[in-house]
Image (tube, rainbow, N blue to C red; front, side):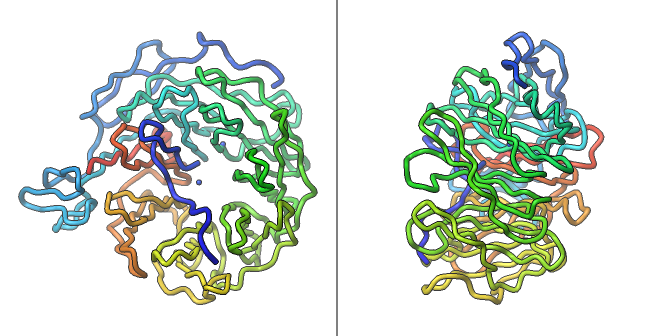
Length: 445
């Protein structure tokens, strides 16, 4: 089982890379409705409906403990502590990440990263109190304006609730597009917003399918050079794939049964045959991880992945030990986070070789400390804690877990380069929060 598509968080457009996107029948609001954000405070950035542009003071915000002067190789020098791994000093303090709460709305439930106006600066789309908004980045880790992403008239007529946001350049024009997933007790919906590259979104294309669409992923599943979509239906217990057509529209394929209450999903070639497969995480009682394999652009029936991962929440495929095989990082609700290593003959070792005691609501994989090895960041809001966790890779089958860092009940995350230093940063959607809608954690190695 060789790796063909490693799911990792990439960097911003300035580095020639794309972010990790682990997303009305009327046209979108004109520029006058794209409101600007207020000035930045000492504890982060205060967003409002004002017309004053935010400052670009890259030194403001609440910074985690810095005890040394970090250099570009991720090593800090100075007293009393010195960073030897790019994230932690010898006193156990985080040293190279700048934590900036962004005050907007409350009860955020989803976030995605993308460059929606094709200016080379990474933006974010946040779901807060059931409403999606774009926050346009200025390339320094600040956000200079915000605007709503209104639902389609179909979503409004259905009375559907907004579940997730997903970002990806779907039509190859260099600007990231947005997919919003909706659900109700009877009808689900995807709204697909194509960006025109100047910050404006075309009227959404509404796809009423399923019942309660939870998460979205994208890949070229049939090898025609077009980006297709896949989504989980939590009430229909299915995976639905939508194939892209040359006219820019999507055609839903018949739903595939994948077990009780599926939620998160991930894309990787887990069979080694060169086609993108889908891993689905059912959250219902007795649910087991499901593999939906792709044979020449046609998906087969789902089969259980025989790994010992009770109550799974997320599954993230990547090559963590550098052997060229796809491994699986699984976060669970009752048994922490587990790593199952890939086998030469295909599949995964059924027993976890590595375990972290805390499970996560969402996970991203990237090289965060600039050592050329994949690391992991967890949003630990699932455990009822207001923290997140860095798990540093070593290139072998060992990981180094850093002390949990404070946040405000992070439930979702996205990664990319928000401040233009070609190093991965993280944005968190914070739930159970009265004011901090999301937080930016900037790298500074």
